[in-house]
Length: 301
Image 1 (cartoon, rainbow, N blue to C red):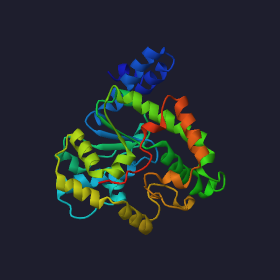
Image 2 (image 1 turned 45 degrees about the vertical axis):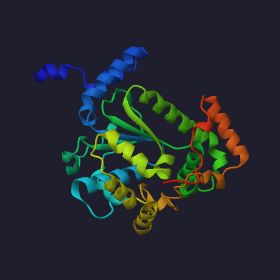
Image 3 (image 1 turned 120 degrees about the vertical axis):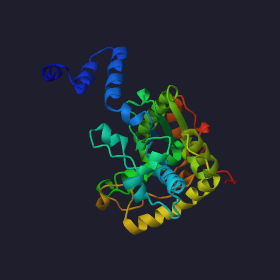
């Protein structure tokens, strides 16, 4: 039996061989490789997949607080650090790259989902049988937030670009590729698309929808408490205390990860010409800026 096992091709070899096959056959190879390696982890889990700077960390803290209150009756906020290190530690991008998968928190023993996984890579998501929560943001606020996170606040590239309007092509090429992948994958999987703007403008309604879709018990008092415990100002206070959140090289970062969080922040940073350039970029990809929420209404929850 051992001799036979040595003679059989490995999962990795099968996957690599699939790269030389026609597209339809290639997908069969990829699906088989995925199911052999990752299906047992992801088939009963929630995957949070987000375009960068679209509220993935805020979503993690919201769900960590909701679950901790629901299961453990926790009466204090769960911090971003606790969420990332303890309750939701598994990053999908990391373990797809062969990093160790960590045992889920014991809270999940009491829930209908086995774990919550986060990440930005869309690799193999088209084969996933679990729930996928897709997060995105309007392209104008994304552009501004991406500029500060990737360039203005990083000491190693400080001064390379003077303002967000100078990185429209760089930022939106990434944004459009990810957004269009999300849209395609969502058509054939158990997915929910949520925009960051609704998380900020209507947090109760949006979180209620997400929790119900996840199959978790819905408790309106717990939703209110989770939102209170996850307030932007609490995450900013945590960052003031421990340093920049969600960035491994703190010595290379000079600002806040929790920079603004506002819907419509783009109005302070983009010119009319910048907005028009974004419109044209979206139109070339078959999208319209008018289909996104680009500013908060006067009345919100």
